[in-house]
Image (cartoon, rainbow, N blue to C red):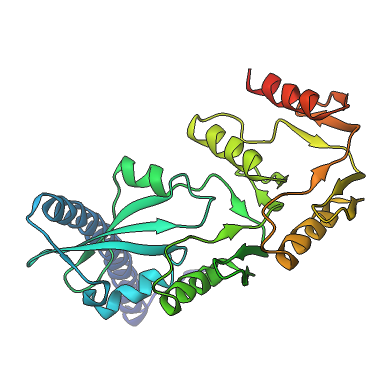
Length: 291
């Protein structure tokens, strides 16, 4: 049976074909332009940062920063506080920031803003290393402030609470104290409990050296701690470590930490176990991991 195709059908097919072709070409052109705009933006930011770095600058007050910078300081930079602000006329700002967020590789860094207050994308290796995170805190975490009050952070957005405290106490220079133990999540998803600053430092040192960031060993529970007031806290399971943190929050003026009661069993990263009978053996166990 012979099929007859009308002139109208041919015309409709042609219109559909050219419409579809035009749509595809437009999409490709839009994507290409978008990628080009992003690339050019990063190139422009890099060039502007270089100009700000090399230009003559004057130190100005924090209040001189454009209002637009608040978007960054309430977002990506919420865990920072401003140390100094320098302005390069007609170019932008170089802002030196510090942080109480000890998951960061470095406690200080420089960030750059355009004259209008847009944060510039700093792709330099120096900036990446300083802002790099060795781990993620598992919230909540607590800080003891210089007036012995405490601030609890329940999310990363709550870092601004510390900055607000210092704005309300502008004459205070002493920084807050992180309350241990804390739980952290490493890059591989492993969750670790860091009992004290020494363990936190070991994790950060491993991060800087590109080594395995997992703790050398973990305690086999249950264990007990004798606190400075002679009370005893028993840690039967991982979540019980928060009892130690609660004690320190309730006793902010006491700087001494709870003492781990021996003997204890530990499990090394390779799965082997050992019994530790005193503080000297514990120190030797830590040293063996570093070696």
